Length: 151
Image (tube, rainbow, N blue to C red; front, side, top):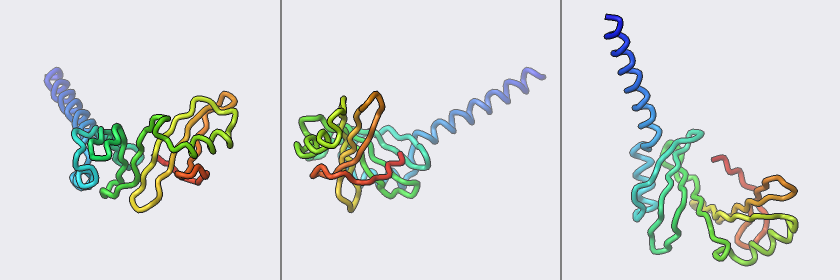
């Protein structure tokens, strides 16, 4: 009898854990509809939820062909922003030149374009300097901007 109770409890606990995990990987319908509206050519996004936001990792195959990216949505389906890793060759030269001028001792620069609905895009520039990681944000003209990236 104890084994049967233990087995029933174990089965319920395991099922609950799977449901909890499944809930983390499937965004609510409103979020998924907003995503499909914003990125109609994206297929099979990988969803996860962090800090109350839904993140879709996917390959964008639109006419702009931006490639790999991450779109962030709030719990109501409002598009917060999208992060697109950029190859150094695709970054506007003024962004590279000004960033290196501000941080001449910087090394291992990485560039990610951040697009906001209704706002000007930014570049997130990550690099190391003096053995420490550093991140700054600049506009398309290389001017530093404040940005609260809370993902």
